[in-house]
Length: 300
Image 1 (tube, rainbow, N blue to C red):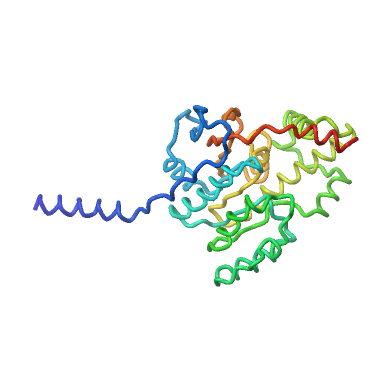
Image 2 (image 1 turned 90 degrees about the vertical axis):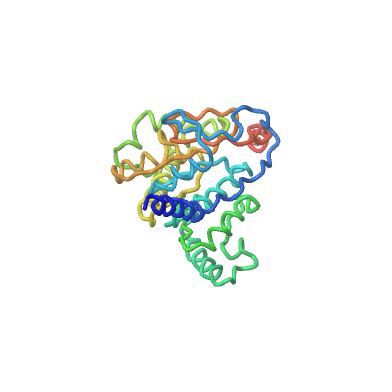
């Protein structure tokens, strides 16, 4: 009898192990800066300080109803990791929805049509044209993510504002109700970031309007996350997903009980604190560029 129990337990364990699919192979680094940095490839749980394996990261993200992944828009390695995470999470559990900062509401009908066609193995030949993809988002970086998402059962959803909404907010300087997102320290930090990212070239009178647009964009992403089927995954710029400044604050204001996990993909050498995110994954860095020099030249 004892031997039967042992054999049965061994067979059950073998069956369980065989039923777990191995994770997809990790992408090869494309960047060339920071390849000798000690943090390269490190995944850190900022809440505990523990270093995680990719498999442990996937397990943590798989249990979250909402996952926010922050990126640097021009970093190819970070986009490759986003695609890897989409595939790995899909193996772990069915994805409920995928949301992109790079898509606007006016594109949603075309996204839906392209997704229906893709599932029927009739993906549009010129997919960027079919989606009216915006030129400001490098298709060579986002295309693989979009193509994969369109083939999945989970809907691909717009998470941004339309252009006319942005212009209306800019002109009216629309204000949000008082809450976590409208604290003075939050708005002051966002104003400083807006001024810095525009190299100090924006007139001071323009800053409140820019702040209103930034916060209304974050509010829209939070609203879309709450409305989306779970588990929901949002891909957006790292500043948008920061716990201390971005979408998570709006989630608190709209639905205090809503649970989410923030993963920031960061270049080696950058500092990501527990105040900003729950998890960080370090990638190679992009070559340094003086964006301000070109902005100053254009402003003359």
